Amino acid sequence: MKKKDAALTWKKLHSEAGPELPLFGVRIDTLQHPVSAASFKRLVLEAPDWVTVVATTCDDKIIMVEQFRFGVGELTIEPVGGIIDAGEKSLAAAQRELLEETGFGEGRWRYLGSVQGNPAIQNNLCHHWLAEGVVRLQEPSPDEGEAIQVHTLTLPELKEAIAVGTLKHPLGLSALSRVFPLWEYPYAQPTGPDDT
Image (cartoon, rainbow, N blue to C red; front, top):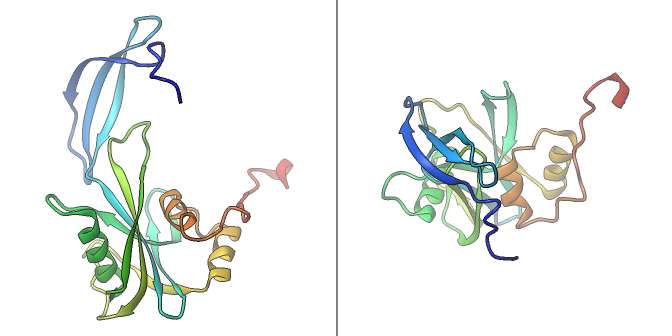
Protein backbone atom coordinates (compact mmCIF):
# COMPACT_ATOMS: atom_id res chain seq x y z
CA MET A 1 0.00 0.00 0.00
CA LYS A 2 1.31 3.42 -0.88
CA LYS A 3 0.94 6.59 1.19
CA LYS A 4 -2.38 8.43 1.15
CA ASP A 5 -2.87 10.09 -2.20
CA ALA A 6 -3.67 13.81 -1.89
CA ALA A 7 -5.73 13.54 -5.09
CA LEU A 8 -8.14 11.19 -3.26
CA THR A 9 -8.41 12.79 0.18
CA TRP A 10 -11.38 15.13 0.69
CA LYS A 11 -10.98 18.10 3.05
CA LYS A 12 -13.75 18.59 5.62
CA LEU A 13 -14.96 22.20 5.53
CA HIS A 14 -17.90 22.06 7.92
CA SER A 15 -20.10 19.68 9.92
CA GLU A 16 -23.65 20.14 11.13
CA ALA A 17 -25.96 17.91 13.13
CA GLY A 18 -28.98 16.40 11.42
CA PRO A 19 -32.11 14.89 12.97
CA GLU A 20 -31.72 12.17 15.60
CA LEU A 21 -32.87 8.75 14.42
CA PRO A 22 -33.38 5.47 16.29
CA LEU A 23 -29.95 3.77 16.51
CA PHE A 24 -28.16 6.57 14.62
CA GLY A 25 -27.07 10.16 14.98
CA VAL A 26 -27.09 12.11 11.73
CA ARG A 27 -24.29 14.42 10.63
CA ILE A 28 -24.02 16.40 7.42
CA ASP A 29 -20.43 17.11 6.41
CA THR A 30 -19.47 19.66 3.77
CA LEU A 31 -16.35 18.41 2.02
CA GLN A 32 -14.07 19.77 -0.68
CA HIS A 33 -13.38 17.60 -3.72
CA PRO A 34 -9.62 16.86 -3.83
CA VAL A 35 -9.20 17.75 -7.52
CA SER A 36 -11.93 20.21 -8.55
CA ALA A 37 -12.17 22.00 -5.14
CA ALA A 38 -15.98 21.96 -5.49
CA SER A 39 -17.85 21.46 -2.21
CA PHE A 40 -20.34 18.67 -1.59
CA LYS A 41 -22.60 17.76 1.32
CA ARG A 42 -22.30 14.17 2.52
CA LEU A 43 -24.46 12.23 4.98
CA VAL A 44 -22.77 10.43 7.90
CA LEU A 45 -24.70 8.12 10.21
CA GLU A 46 -23.02 8.09 13.61
CA ALA A 47 -23.44 4.88 15.56
CA PRO A 48 -21.84 2.97 18.42
CA ASP A 49 -19.68 0.01 17.46
CA TRP A 50 -21.39 -3.34 16.96
CA VAL A 51 -20.53 -6.97 17.65
CA THR A 52 -21.14 -10.18 15.71
CA VAL A 53 -20.67 -13.53 17.45
CA VAL A 54 -19.83 -16.86 15.81
CA ALA A 55 -20.80 -19.34 18.54
CA THR A 56 -20.38 -23.11 18.44
CA THR A 57 -21.55 -25.78 20.86
CA CYS A 58 -19.51 -28.68 22.25
CA ASP A 59 -20.92 -30.89 19.47
CA ASP A 60 -19.86 -28.40 16.76
CA LYS A 61 -23.29 -26.92 16.05
CA ILE A 62 -23.30 -23.27 15.00
CA ILE A 63 -25.74 -21.05 16.88
CA MET A 64 -27.76 -18.79 14.61
CA VAL A 65 -30.78 -16.57 15.06
CA GLU A 66 -33.74 -16.07 12.77
CA GLN A 67 -35.54 -12.75 12.79
CA PHE A 68 -37.50 -10.36 10.61
CA ARG A 69 -35.30 -7.64 9.13
CA PHE A 70 -37.23 -4.45 8.41
CA GLY A 71 -34.95 -3.11 5.66
CA VAL A 72 -35.46 -6.12 3.39
CA GLY A 73 -38.88 -7.06 4.76
CA GLU A 74 -38.10 -10.74 5.24
CA LEU A 75 -36.89 -13.36 7.69
CA THR A 76 -33.14 -13.88 7.79
CA ILE A 77 -30.75 -16.32 9.46
CA GLU A 78 -27.59 -14.81 10.89
CA PRO A 79 -25.12 -15.02 13.77
CA VAL A 80 -25.92 -13.17 16.99
CA GLY A 81 -25.12 -9.48 16.84
CA GLY A 82 -25.87 -6.21 18.52
CA ILE A 83 -24.84 -2.77 19.70
CA ILE A 84 -22.03 -2.15 22.18
CA ASP A 85 -23.45 -0.09 25.04
CA ALA A 86 -21.71 3.11 26.18
CA GLY A 87 -18.68 2.23 28.32
CA GLU A 88 -18.93 -1.47 27.45
CA LYS A 89 -16.04 -3.49 25.97
CA SER A 90 -16.74 -5.46 22.80
CA LEU A 91 -16.17 -8.82 24.54
CA ALA A 92 -18.68 -7.97 27.26
CA ALA A 93 -21.19 -6.86 24.61
CA ALA A 94 -20.66 -10.08 22.62
CA GLN A 95 -21.18 -12.23 25.72
CA ARG A 96 -24.25 -10.22 26.75
CA GLU A 97 -25.84 -10.39 23.29
CA LEU A 98 -25.24 -14.15 22.97
CA LEU A 99 -26.82 -14.80 26.38
CA GLU A 100 -29.78 -12.46 25.78
CA GLU A 101 -30.62 -13.63 22.27
CA THR A 102 -29.94 -17.36 22.64
CA GLY A 103 -29.51 -18.29 26.31
CA PHE A 104 -26.03 -19.67 25.54
CA GLY A 105 -22.82 -18.60 27.28
CA GLU A 106 -19.47 -19.57 28.78
CA GLY A 107 -17.07 -21.30 26.35
CA ARG A 108 -13.71 -20.13 24.99
CA TRP A 109 -13.71 -16.65 23.43
CA ARG A 110 -11.37 -15.31 20.77
CA TYR A 111 -11.34 -11.94 18.99
CA LEU A 112 -11.56 -12.21 15.18
CA GLY A 113 -10.95 -8.56 14.29
CA SER A 114 -13.27 -5.83 13.07
CA VAL A 115 -14.77 -4.53 9.85
CA GLN A 116 -16.44 -1.28 8.82
CA GLY A 117 -20.19 -1.84 8.62
CA ASN A 118 -20.82 0.56 5.72
CA PRO A 119 -17.98 3.09 5.38
CA ALA A 120 -19.78 5.05 2.67
CA ILE A 121 -22.18 6.52 5.24
CA GLN A 122 -21.38 5.07 8.70
CA ASN A 123 -18.57 5.86 11.14
CA ASN A 124 -18.60 2.69 13.28
CA LEU A 125 -16.92 -0.72 13.42
CA CYS A 126 -18.33 -4.20 13.85
CA HIS A 127 -16.19 -6.42 16.09
CA HIS A 128 -16.23 -10.16 15.40
CA TRP A 129 -15.91 -12.72 18.20
CA LEU A 130 -15.68 -16.51 18.19
CA ALA A 131 -17.15 -18.41 21.16
CA GLU A 132 -16.37 -22.14 21.11
CA GLY A 133 -17.94 -24.78 23.33
CA VAL A 134 -20.79 -22.60 24.59
CA VAL A 135 -23.55 -24.19 26.65
CA ARG A 136 -27.20 -23.39 27.26
CA LEU A 137 -27.46 -21.44 30.53
CA GLN A 138 -30.97 -20.00 30.45
CA GLU A 139 -33.96 -19.22 28.28
CA PRO A 140 -33.34 -16.43 25.75
CA SER A 141 -34.37 -12.95 26.93
CA PRO A 142 -34.38 -10.70 23.84
CA ASP A 143 -35.16 -6.99 24.00
CA GLU A 144 -38.84 -6.04 23.88
CA GLY A 145 -38.39 -4.88 20.26
CA GLU A 146 -36.97 -8.24 19.15
CA ALA A 147 -38.66 -11.50 18.10
CA ILE A 148 -35.99 -14.17 17.64
CA GLN A 149 -35.89 -17.91 17.02
CA VAL A 150 -32.67 -19.76 17.87
CA HIS A 151 -31.28 -22.42 15.52
CA THR A 152 -28.28 -24.73 15.88
CA LEU A 153 -26.92 -25.62 12.45
CA THR A 154 -24.33 -28.05 11.22
CA LEU A 155 -21.70 -26.65 8.86
CA PRO A 156 -23.44 -28.25 5.82
CA GLU A 157 -26.74 -26.66 6.92
CA LEU A 158 -24.99 -23.30 7.29
CA LYS A 159 -23.54 -23.60 3.79
CA GLU A 160 -26.97 -24.54 2.45
CA ALA A 161 -28.46 -21.40 4.04
CA ILE A 162 -25.84 -19.36 2.19
CA ALA A 163 -26.40 -21.22 -1.08
CA VAL A 164 -30.17 -20.63 -1.07
CA GLY A 165 -29.88 -17.01 0.10
CA THR A 166 -31.42 -17.33 3.56
CA LEU A 167 -28.11 -16.18 5.04
CA LYS A 168 -26.70 -13.13 3.27
CA HIS A 169 -26.12 -10.59 6.04
CA PRO A 170 -22.68 -9.16 5.13
CA LEU A 171 -21.46 -8.69 8.70
CA GLY A 172 -22.55 -12.20 9.60
CA LEU A 173 -20.86 -13.63 6.52
CA SER A 174 -17.71 -11.65 7.32
CA ALA A 175 -17.54 -13.12 10.83
CA LEU A 176 -18.40 -16.66 9.72
CA SER A 177 -15.82 -16.59 6.92
CA ARG A 178 -13.08 -15.97 9.50
CA VAL A 179 -13.92 -19.34 11.05
CA PHE A 180 -15.30 -21.55 8.25
CA PRO A 181 -14.43 -21.96 4.53
CA LEU A 182 -17.59 -20.49 2.98
CA TRP A 183 -16.75 -18.63 -0.17
CA GLU A 184 -16.92 -21.61 -2.49
CA TYR A 185 -20.68 -21.35 -1.93
CA PRO A 186 -21.69 -18.07 -3.63
CA TYR A 187 -25.29 -16.91 -3.74
CA ALA A 188 -26.58 -15.53 -7.03
CA GLN A 189 -30.23 -14.60 -7.35
CA PRO A 190 -31.60 -13.95 -10.85
CA THR A 191 -32.71 -10.34 -11.21
CA GLY A 192 -35.10 -10.83 -14.08
CA PRO A 193 -36.39 -13.25 -16.72
CA ASP A 194 -33.34 -12.72 -18.93
CA ASP A 195 -31.01 -13.86 -16.13
CA THR A 196 -32.55 -17.31 -15.58
